[in-house]
Length: 222
Image (cartoon, rainbow, N blue to C red; front, side, top):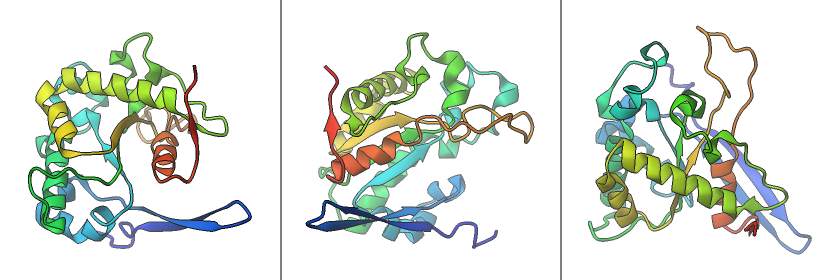
């Protein structure tokens, strides 16, 4: 309703080593779920999506039916099957095909970070030894071992929560992607109140894109 709320937030980051400077422009855009469900609405955002050098795409796991069935109903948002992750990613693929005139056989080459939001709400159904229960620790470089562990675990969950064909489709349609999970608050609000705000793993997808675009280094922990 309020157009100013949905205007993108745009930031410029400069990276330099004394000899050359590289500039990265980052745009944060909050599209409503119903907009992402409509290809006609999504086309309004194609300049931000299809022509970007990298994308962080938030997915709501609380719109996955099998996840909802395992969580307390009192803590769930209103169900909207039209904006579940499976449907949204399908529309994202279609948008790329239409905007860039891609064939069905071509993979999307832009690095895409698929990030499950509301990680705090998923904790009751995560495995006890889940890597998603631990904070990330990127000390000077991207921790590639942690990134791979998170990606593998989420891919396994999505196989279980949705179906294997969902993951097969992503592997077939995207050339460079990784899964992440994050919580912007760190805990679920009681009503409209939070005891404190403790963001959890929110930096991971952004740092991964910086690594893929060669702005920062990465290292595996052996």
